[in-house]
Length: 213
Image 1: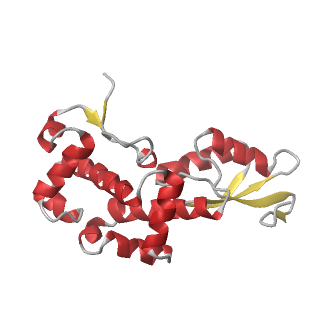
Image 2 (image 1 turned 60 degrees about the vertical axis):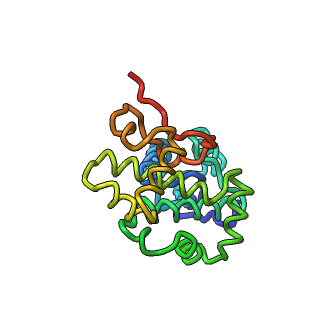
């Protein structure tokens, strides 16, 4: 039995470390998958799930395979776990921290959250994900810009400021470079956004896809 497995009555308490747990909807899906088998989720947070299951009916390997089959492969080594922490920190900074991104540098935030030098985490991220950390951050910033543009509550200048861009011109140029269209063209289009857990996957080109009619 894994050293992180403990018996609780006739149930076994075990910890899983799934990759790609980057948003609340991912955690909801994982909870539904696990509890749909009759097991219980004791605690769930990005990158870690504590579960209770009956060892006479299931095994830890069963749950690892179940999550992997649904896009949540196990983070089986320290590097995988650390990269997932980096992804979660980027999402927190850009999508959940409001105006913080305009106040603190990306590198300073990540160093504080991860507890390692930016040089180290940047090199590790590139090695594991085959995309630079800088580009991953840019892709998320453009995805957030798309969201704010669609809400139509802020001016483009306010969006640029919130996302830490030095000017509207800089944001507009980067938006076109990543998406292949201008901000004005995006407003008029039926292009859809990218799910947060899919950002950076096979996105070396434009990141916008069209909604199906």
